[in-house]
Length: 284
Ligand code: AMP
Image (cartoon, rainbow, N blue to C red; front, side):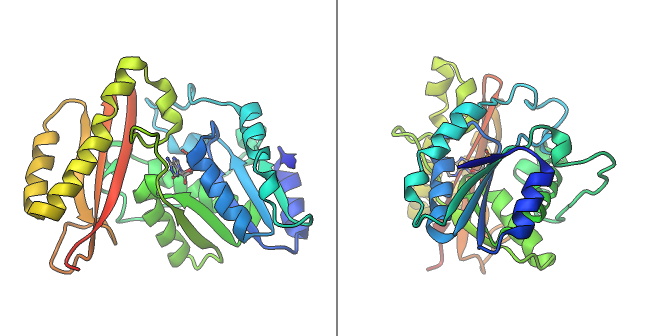
């Protein structure tokens, strides 16, 4: 397994590579959710590039960019444990872990990629500029790796919609593959930020998946409007960022044309903000 740390080397690799490349963009501190994405790429591509880059552009000024866990050695050993899944000896597993921010955004990098319309709800409201940062880094990583397929987790549902729109609008030659949320046994979605939780907060954090489940049950058994009433109650609490039920195709309010809803929530436990969601078919 090769670890590439510079822009020059990744460009030289991807420019010469005549095999299909799958990319798994991550910010590191890898858990089993990330590894599922890597596994999916390994099954479908001759070359898999896992990127590990804590992208400053997607963090707000008061967010956790400085303290975000950076665990490159552990990440490398976790990824190398998947080498046995390489389907044949010519297939490759590569880590692109830029050694500095400049390897991704060189001096005088002045471009921002912004997908309008899908970022004025859910995480976009309390994290201004976050999705512009995500789109800019994803576009840049696609350009550096020349990937044909890219793997993202449904845990960041709004992100998946925005990236799919980016690819569609700009006709990028990348197929987007989405992977289900991987959870701990007790239901908490795996997240690099779970590391910040102390024992009490880890217990309280179960409120988030429990409420998502509860809303799902309400949607299925009592209908959308009963579930919406419940979100209004949740949204009054001080540690709730949001609970919303929206049309999963475009994050607009649920209408008669809606076939599937996303039930999404974000809550804070201590200083840690966690998100979760589920998809529910309706009007079937
Ligand atoms: P991150 O390192 O948090 O930026 O996440 C990198 C990728 O892993 C994103 O596409 C996430 O949606 C995905 N991911 C994070 N947590 C999970 C999870 N629990 N299950 C599935 N995918 C995940």
